[in-house]
Length: 166
Image 1 (cartoon, rainbow, N blue to C red):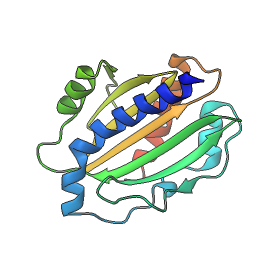
Image 2: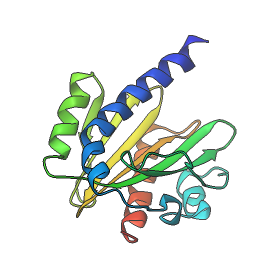
Image 3: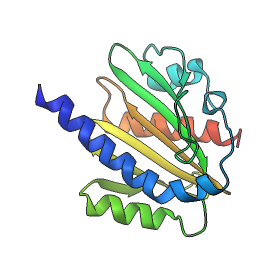
Image 4: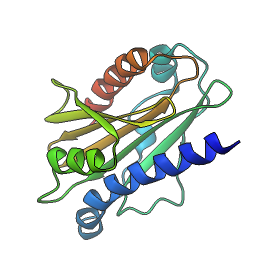
């Protein structure tokens, strides 16, 4: 019973670090962006190999944090993609350092966007963080029954597809 609570706390802490680094610049130049236009349900389903529900934008999203679109994978899995504009001084290196301070595993993901890295907040959840031009994209996923390697492969494929629309 405590495992979902710990997972939620860990994920929220990881997201807080991301938003801490990216929130101020977006507040200064916030712009509306529909993250649900970056990927289709069919693309996600093909990449993860499981049924995927319809994408739903976060209607209550704070544009300082970014626009996100969320999907349900199978019965209890999740997939979300967030996109926002980042500002001066916000870098992958700073984000990675902060995540490491929180004892969240990070690893480079070369060849995706201008700079990308994976973070693993725990409980089987995986995040792919990507900087491209003035945009920051974050894919967060938990695919029931999938290995970390399979999730990384799916996240890379989907991030590359999403970047074609940025």
